[in-house]
Image 1 (cartoon, rainbow, N blue to C red):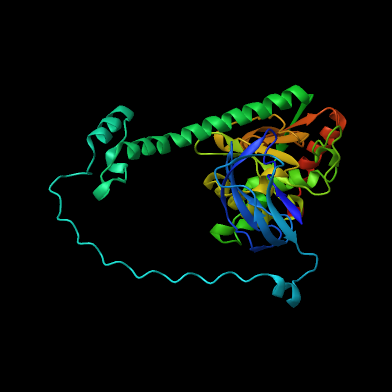
Image 2: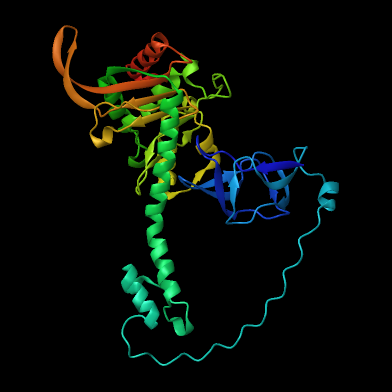
Length: 385
């Protein structure tokens, strides 16, 4: 037997609210199946199960707020690669569905009402005026769909929910960043990179691709940032107690701004191993799901370093703050043509400012400089990415 625990989905997450179970007791699950949806300060996250087996029991009801590490379900793990016929025989079959009741005869339709607009109780109309609710957007739950005061109050609460979610997210971000600046002795390095060779290669590469499969410069920046971690692995780490051992895999967190405000930084898993086309597709998918609120728990819980870019906002240089428990974060500004000296000649070149914030407890300026130098060198050889 194994316990399915409430995972930690962020540096300062203390608890999450179970929104709903996606599986029921008695269901068979495979590793990485989504088993539940959990609401955190940063939105709703799909939580995966990390072993295969059969759900013996669900311990938490939807709507409950559950501290991180609390058992949520009991799982009977499967030891073998497949279930044997004997084991299958021991699994009780699901009860047959109850016979459906005969449908009731449809009620006679009421005569059309001469009143224009929705039907509203007097108290419901007063509450709508007090709360500023548009009655045309409210569904009535009273007799003959009359809008009651409770319907108006529910609509007002639903309208305020995005603002409340954004406020919760801001508080979570503030707590994480305050912790980072309090605990991690940040130091910063920056360099300017000529990306002319990279942009020329992208133009040539995209000429042979369909519109939907084209590669954006962001993909090259992310791939170079990921591959360079092989040269300076101590930057690819997370604090575990009193030490930050380098991670054997490179999960690149990508900072994504959300439409309602705030941001999340889910992981592109094994970004260093992805072909550029696959990385571009994975990035598009990750951004879309982040903004739709359908990220998975593994994407939120295991980034080993984060990359942030504000180039699309016109920012030339970013000085980011490390996301705990990570030990480094990379920033890229916008790509812009600026004067640049090459071979003793001044000419306009497409340049990008790359920055690195690192934790001085695990690295130093020499090693951090080697990391930025590696990114630069790789972007001069884009065909190798």
